[in-house]
Length: 123
Image (cartoon, rainbow, N blue to C red; front, side, top):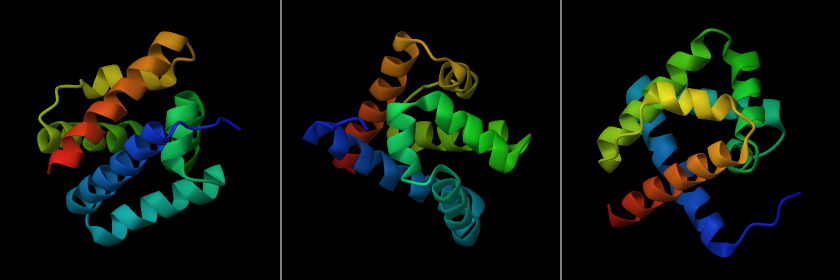
């Protein structure tokens, strides 16, 4: 298991909070909570930690759980995070990098999480 730096844990915590808020406001409270529940059950742990550690594993599991709806769900999440946090990550690009297993994609995902966290800490 990966050992997190305290600032990484803080970034994941804020990203989790922002993502929950976005999902629940975009899809309705019950639907947002259900999505997060199913992901946590399928992954066996916090989906946001999995996204940080292994974005491809996160993506593969979200596809198993939601099928063709996975890309739509990810797009909704990224678009609304952009709106809430003043960012400009392309949902299509996010989907591309989350499917990749290379180190630069991992760092780009982590950078996005850190930017969301920084913005989320200000609000």
